[in-house]
Amino acid sequence: MPRDAVEAHRHPLLRLIGNPDIRRLWAVGALANAMRWVEILVASVFTFEATGSAFATSLVVMARSVPMLLAGAFTGAIAEVLDRRKLLMCGQAATALSTAAIAALAFAGALEVWHLGLAALLAGLVWTGEMASRRRMLSEAAGEEDLVQAMALDTTTAHTTRMIGPLLGGVLYQWLGIGPAFALASACYGCTFLMLSGVRLPQARRAFRPRQVLLDMAEGVALVRRLPVLRVVVVATVAMNVFAFSFASVLPALGTRAYGAMPAQIGLLTAAEPMGALLAGLALAAGRRAWLSPLALLGGCAVFMLALLLLPLMPALWLAVGLLALGGLGTALFGALQTALAVTASPPEARSRVLGLVTTCIGTGPFGVLLTGALADALGPQAGIPIMAALGLALLLGGGALAMRGPAQAR
Image 1 (tube, rainbow, N blue to C red):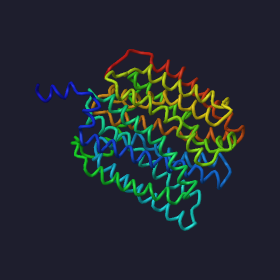
Image 2: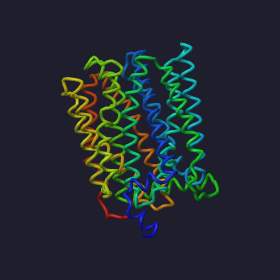
Image 3: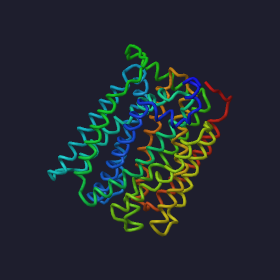
């Protein structure tokens, strides 16, 4: 049998793992995401212990998302014309230096909350380019035939790191403190820099012209407005990031006040949702069928928001962990289809631009983080989380119905 025919009959996961560029890009995402969640957890716990305020904790978490809102569309357009591999390498080098500085301040006993806020802003700027650069490169290396499986594999890995990262961060903080946690993150970012240097994926680029970048951004917006599938992706992304994922910013307050949890137990609570998402993501990645459906995307969002509505009714920590794990089944579907639908519904030459706009939608998260933090301070996290989830469900149902109106288009 010819080699191409053999490749076509192999399971998609085997084809993906056999590609060295995919392995490197996947490993970079895994390691960087794990350290991102270690940072978020330890910075949140440190801030809450230092200030006693859920709102202040939310501000530190919010700082990581602000660059997405302000620069997401721009980084998507830039990724069409500049070397995406070099952009990613610069970002990893910058975060390695930033986390090393935080570790040094912590070891010196001079760390302040505002230092963590500045480091979070820089990390958010690097994170902003991740979807338009690394995930775009991953989709190109996989090809459209294996695209859903590649995104499911990457998303499953992200869920795994969201589970392991907070657990590791909680243990490190409780037993060693914030300094060793950030020192570990710095070393890992140095490793991702080295991994990216081995990626050899070709990229077609154009000359950099500032005016053309602005025109590309405008064309990306017009494309999203024209295609129902992309409109659904935008609605779902805004709903999840503003009204659902923002719950994580007040988990230290929820765990402490509702369950008397220690830092390691708060890490377990934070890891519960990605734990469930990991199981669902493995099923998606292992399957041969591609569920490229905007209704499936909306359904996954709704499952998670329903779990958040029920969360205050859980009388014990282990029940809260179990409920959030069930909600993770929905976030797995959302995570895999968010990128896959955005890529397959867009023309190849506009995919980074569209992914950049999706990143901008992710950047709306700070509004939800601020509102969740304010509600948690005023009413308690047990009230703030379900209020936000109810608002998110309303947006999901109403906005999703409006977004799907009009002729279905594949391109």
